[in-house]
Image (cartoon, rainbow, N blue to C red; front, side):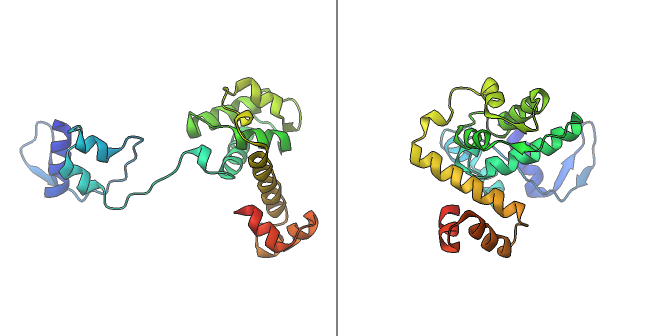
Length: 195
């Protein structure tokens, strides 16, 4: 708590005192911070200073865990695939549909770090052009898609296929119309399945 007092003072007075220094230095700090703890609960339990909490809690942004962000898992997986393709001088083309289903059904208790490590592992050990589900299963824990109902897996898979087709066709409004046509569904159905 003593460090919190110092931080709060620096934010309030907009000056700091260098270690061993005698003259205050003017500062104009901007703080962007993140936590996985509930600071409000910590304030209630006297583990975090309430004055500092209210000073920092100007624009709170709640970012849900990866398991609650649906198709973001695939977008991030593709990002990491490209990144590790460059690092390891590989030319993997993407993920098999089964691998994408597995990724979307996994709970990711380690959140983004676990996803990053999983994709790096898959890039290193994949011998085919596409990362397959069997490669991912070797590294995954037990919270896989087996815990999801068939309807949820189907919904996630359809969303994945639709998004892949949209990206393949350019990613704009016109490509959504073309994707619906290619997939044999109406544009209204496409939008409903993307919700």
